[in-house]
Image (cartoon, rainbow, N blue to C red; front, side):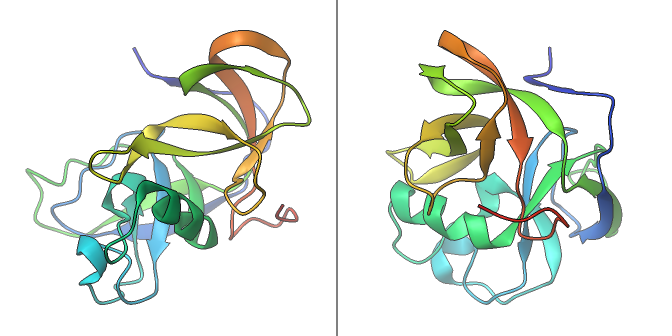
Length: 170
């Protein structure tokens, strides 16, 4: 079962290229690699390709630094799947830059319509998750707003605010 759900409404999208060898699943949170050292523990050259959040890992960064850094490169939500393991060609991928979605929360929290959401991940490895989000109070980490009030929620409806959308960022 998918951990997210698209709502039928306007979802301004952009077309981006995904590098060969990179697997994308519909619903993955994506970033644009347009600056050196955003991947491979800070040892990468900018490719101008889209990658799922799990590839975003700056040099020696903690999970908190990776969460803050990804905001400036946040593209949106992948609209299509791409099997990078069995495909050696680059592929175009449609990315929604605005819209409403439901994602799983890590950890479960009480959320409201004035609360922000941001990237979640694994502290031990400093890796960001492609499909889990968390409630954040710091606007430096915020990728959008919650769109509902829920108590001890395991998932919640969100609204995107990406670096590339026509809607004002947080």
